[in-house]
Length: 156
Length: 127
Image (cartoon, rainbow over all chains, first blue to last red; front, side):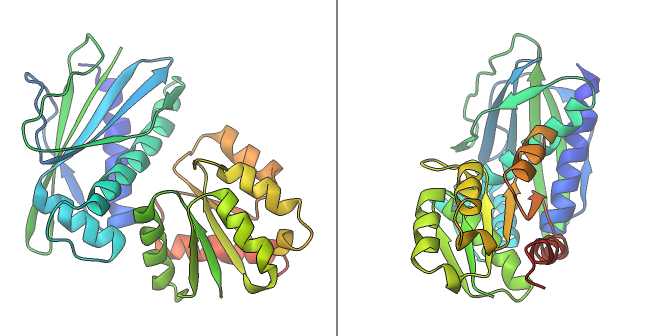
């Protein structure tokens, strides 16, 4: 596991959740991921190129996704609509931008593509890297929801 | 304060409008890209008091839109705030060279956006 990249992602997720959503989020124990399946129901995916090649994904449970949409857009959604998917794409983009700034401080210049959002549980994602995927699990509580999200990344 | 919000993502326009609403800016027109926004502004340049634009958009990007605005005698007076997730230093320099009145990196709070707007309006001589 390349532990150097854990902190940039932790900082990015916590910063974005606190600033944009007003949510305090806690990280669980980072671990190596042993399967290729999405951990949540809505997953934003982004690739990177530059000094390092890699990918990261941000996977949310349905309840977390709907709460995030309500917090960001100011409207309720009952299901995963195209607007909700866009919202997760934007959130992925913002967290990616924040993480890249932190990674730049480690001396690596990265450029990113446009995020892709996958809807569905246990969908197979093949990371383009040959090194193991690290998963950072996060939890939050807001409006009676036990929110969960999973950030997976791999750089080589 | 009549405001033009420019972003290719409809949901992001809603997000920006939601934050603007929290700082009592509710008179908002939307555009999907720089070209559409520039066409709206050149039709009624006196109508608008603020532009809040994304950076990465198809057809005409935020930086191209900024340059077009600042090259137009009537439109250039409208305070221009660039909103982007692109936090790299090169982008900030490019926006400043393009004449941006202020620049805000996502994520932002309503207070941070209010502050960015106030500074942009002051720079553009609107306060």
